[in-house]
Image (cartoon, each protein chain N blue to C red):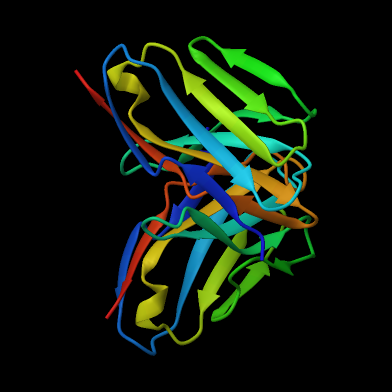
Length: 109
Length: 112
């Protein structure tokens, strides 16, 4: 069946360090979406990438969609304590929608 | 703006009991979704409704039923609750099918 895996599962960084999470799908996705979930909260949409090889930036966050539309990455430059949470990639395949397993980010002040 | 509203926020059930989780959105979205979230497994789609009057199975539909009551409301029913259904349930909506979703605050359900 469809699988969307993310690595690493957990990441602890010192405040100011960079952070990257990688998302890999077993099948092609028509688009990739990224969400952030704060502890005890609900997922909040961050961004959507549609085109093969697309790169988008939101302040300190850089998102990439792979050429084959099966992988993606999120890079945070100079992490802050407000970046704490779990980051999920997600995307549709056919008429189904799949979330990745998530990467939990802890930022140590 | 309320967005997506889920009720109840917490619930404890006994095995075999039935329950309906309610979800309503006020954003005039066409599509609505039900997910469950378990530790280490991300969110898994249970059922979705691409538009009013339609419902489709997601990845993990067994043990659940849904009703798209109208454009605003999408309910999830557990007919005979089992301990394996202990989870956090999220409802979400999007303007059109499979596009970026807005989530409710979730229902934390425990089945003993």
